[in-house]
Length: 94
Image (cartoon, rainbow, N blue to C red; front, side, top):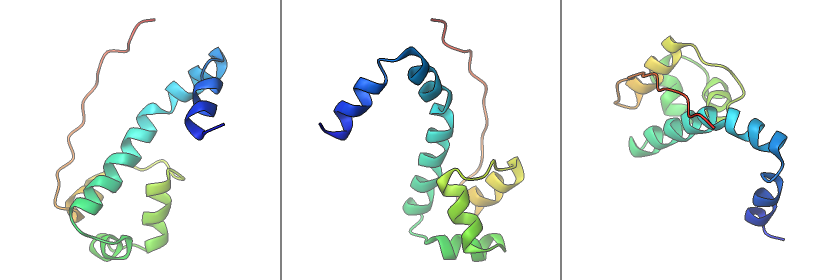
């Protein structure tokens, strides 16, 4: 069984689906962080230097192991040559 098949099978469970959907915004944030850093051609170490922090903090941020403050996201974005813009969207019904 492939990983994709296993995922599809697991998501058939309502409980698993709800948990997965609840994490969607976290997954999207992690994906955006990685995209920004790679697009800027930077390593975690370089971002850490620009943010005046440790590489281990960048690693935890990119793994989703910490809940970042808005200030941290702003500094990360700036280090990668981006600006942080936040928005709120209505929840999907159903």
